[in-house]
Length: 298
Image (tube, rainbow, N blue to C red):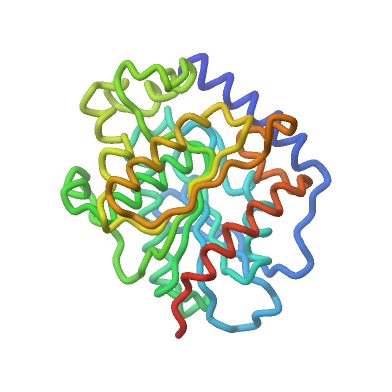
């Protein structure tokens, strides 16, 4: 493991510990925790959250893909954020995936694919509407979700991988939050820390072929899901959002683009995961409303 990945794990954990201290699960949420979705019982676990008021009703689904620089994070760190989405009337899947550098790419993409397959296989058991599946991802999770959306909608891109896309569901729309999307060799818009993390993520340390493979903007087609792109005034990856928007425009994909905060209120990277911020509640509600308008009636 590089010194950068080790530092990121320590730094991010400290920040998350402070952010989530004292938070509790909302009273109105029913939890199904530590469900194993793959052969690795340590890494491949998920939680499912449903609003209690929905009873046994069938609900549209949101799958949350956590961030953490590809080397950090798990479902525990995202439970409060994911439960806040469930309060908007969705069944929310919150999962842990295999991290770099212990597991190189595309392990995380394969795990994401398994989770969507799990949704299909367990739809009847948990009241999940596979005709209305949505997804959110932030930071490295937005990158991973962006790639997965291309994997589902671009057959040429999917053929680059040794596993097949999950079937039996419709990914109606995604929300990409404070993410990284355009990864080009020598591109100064990628900071040095991100470059070091990519070296830990990729089997060949970030060869030109690998960087092309994981550049989301290269693989967007007209079949890409309707997309909500979000960044903030204090997001260190803010310059990435317009690059993703440009790729969506070129492919004629429907999207919404939002920058939260202003010059006097520089909201930080991933501010939407801080449940104490009113701006987080506003952003998350806006994304859920964006999804809700796309829900197809049963």
